[in-house]
Image 1 (cartoon, rainbow over the protein chains, first blue to last red):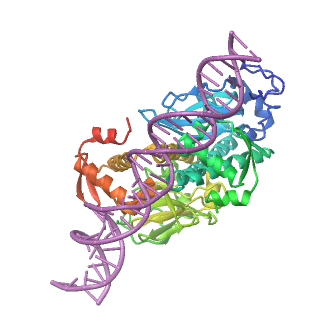
Image 2: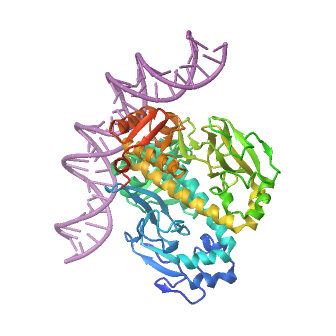
Image 3: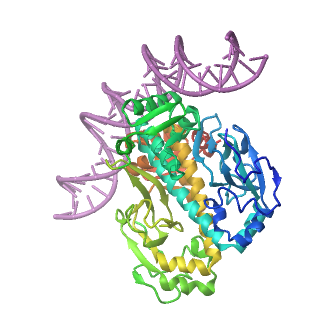
Length: 244
Length: 244
DNA sequence: ACGCGGCATTGACCTAGATCAAAGGCTCAT
DNA sequence: ATGAGCCTTTGATCTAGGTCAATGCCGCGT
């Protein structure tokens, strides 16, 4: 269970008009909003809607008309694509501060679903694009994000196309640790199920389980419980991930 | 062997100052340059250098400082990442009109190498970024390209993570056909080697060969020779690709 | 406190695709 | 034309990881 983020107004759902929500937002400095100067903040706030999404709830479906863009304020969200017969590939896990929904065609390229309870800001597409016109810095911010997402996607292609099961799991453990260290944590939370991890790594749940167990048995990580671990030997973990 | 593109000035290498090169360029209407108004075209041309790259030559290496941005005018270029032990994943094949080299960190996220002889326009990074400031349409164009590349990357993750060998090969044959149909061709050129295809699909050359042969045997495509084919049964090919 | 249902783990087996091996067949330089 | 070397194809094994099956574990609701 994760807590909502907006400065004590945790249960505030709907149009936010008070003028302090964005200013005091916990992702103010790490989301796309950081590129908006303080003076223009309430312009952003006027078009924004707060959304609380319980774990497991779908935010939008692949191929649905892309009418909203979102900033993730709290929680974890997964993005995925599916094949007609139900096979699924998770293309990314988003954490607080991440942006989603950008689609230059008119429909989403993937589905989005909450992994944990999540809090998001929703911006209507047309209004947000209009805002973009007036704020080149925001556009630059989006371009920057798109290109680092692209780099991450290419890294993931390398993983999916060429790494062994063990290397994939090690890479994943390492990646999660890095992202959460960036947020100051030492114990890493595995918010998602083994099933989600499997669908992210192109493996089965059994192989993921064996991979995590092996990493623990070899002393690369220490498992606190099924959903928490600590990186014990960063150097060897990097090596196991074929990352150097 | 592909021919150079710039309106009869095929062998022109180096700074281009004549003022007509860009205007008459064969990718004028499909490259990022289409977002530059005619009047500002020679501003672009002043910072541009034409490059002829023979097949097999490396354009830049992963992790090298990203000092240039490029538009592919003619030929085919592959982008790839490598693991320390030599395993390789090709993340994309670029055709005429495609843009490459965007790196929001200061070094390239991948290597680029010519598959066939290729012609490119090179823009020095700093000058190009400066141009971006003055041409919001160009920035919008880049954002659009980045986000459709991202969508393609996610599609490829689905392929690499969840499709069978046969489905991967069918998807590839279909994708190439689509991209070349867009350029008006009915016979599809397989410019790249089986090795490159394998490294793009996360397979081995043997499996790729068997997959292509099977597709031909089943009447999905007709092989003209080893490097050319025609799509015979689009509907069944899409089905074989698990694309519907 | 208890029991139910969904996760996760562990083990035994099986298969898609890798690996190994051997021929063709093109391309290119002489 | 000729031959060398590479690319591609085809066939025969081998194995990483998938599939199937059983058990354990944990959280949740009553």
